[in-house]
Amino acid sequence: MTERVHFQNPWNFLGLTEEIADPERARGWLLPIPYESTTSYGAGTRDAPTAILEASRQVELYDLEFGREPVMDYGIHTLPPMELVLRSPDTMMQSIEDVVASILLNAQHPEVLGILGGEHSISAGVARGAARALKSGQLVAVHVDAHADMRAEYEGSPYSHACAARRIVEVCPIYQIGIRNISSEEVSFLKGRQDVRTVFSAEANDPGGLYLKDLAEFVRDRNVYLTIDVDGLDPSIMPAVGTPEPGGISWERMLEIARTVCVNAAAVPVFDVVELAPVPGLRAPDFLVAKLVYKVFSYILAGK
Ligand SMILES: [Mn+2]
Image 1 (cartoon, rainbow, N blue to C red):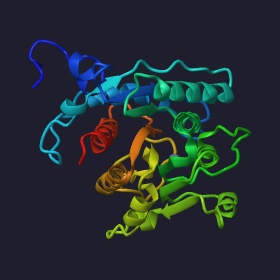
Image 2: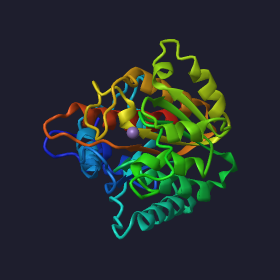
Image 3: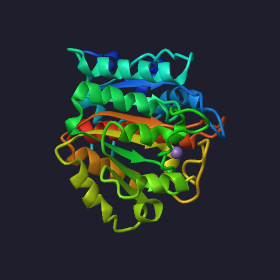
Image 4: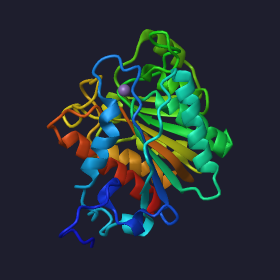
C-alpha cells in the first residue's frame, strides 16, 4: 500500500501517509498526554506515548478480523503531545478537561478522540471534558483495570492514579472490568451503589463471558467513554506496568470487551489507554498497546 522502500514512514500513529493522517479528513484523532506525577510503585508512564507511537509504526495495517486495512477507510490524525502543567495536579486536570472539551466541541472535531497516557489520573480530566462537551445525561464510562481506583484520595491527593475511577463516577455511571485489587474503604464505598457495576477478575475471565451481555445493555444507546488501564491485562502479556497484579484479562477477552462496547454504544467519542510503563528492550507490551489502540479505533469507526 504505502511506499516503504526508500523513506521512513511519517512519525505518527501507524506511520500513515499525510493523506490518511490529514486532520480534516481523519475521523479519529490521537492525543498523547505523557503525564506522570503520582505513580506509587514502578515509574515510567511518561515514556509511554513515544513507545506506543514507535511500536505502532510496526503494526500491520491489514487486519485479519476486518479482512482489509480498516484505517484506510477512516484515517487517524496524531496530535502533538499535550503540554504538561506541572504546577499542581489540579491545574493539570483542569487543563486536560479544557483540552478534551475544546477538541470535542470544535466545529471541526473528530468522531473519536483517542488519548495515550501517561498515568491513570489523567482520566479525571478526560471524563470531565467529555461530560462538558457531551451534556452528561447520555455519558457512561467503561473501565478496564486491575485496581478499583475508587479511593476518595490517596497520599493526600484526589488526583492520584489510585482515585481515577472515583473521579469518573462523580461525572457519570461506570462499569469496571478485571478488578482484583481493592481496599476495604473502596468495598464500603461501592456497597449498594447503583452507578457502579464491578466485574471482578474471576468473572471477567469466565470463558462464557456472561457479563458481556450485561455490558452491552449498559452501553446501549449511550455515549461511552472507554478507559483502559493496561494493568487490567494479565501481567504475563502486560508486564510493563507500575503496579502489576496477578490474574487479569487475556488479549482475546480484551478485544471482546472493546468490541462489545463499540458495537453496542451509540458512540464512543473518547477513549484513553493509560499506565503503560515501557521497559527498555521489551517490545511486546508497547506493541500490544499500539495494536489495541488500532483495534479500538477500528471497532468504533470501521463499522463491524
Ligand atoms: Mn490499575
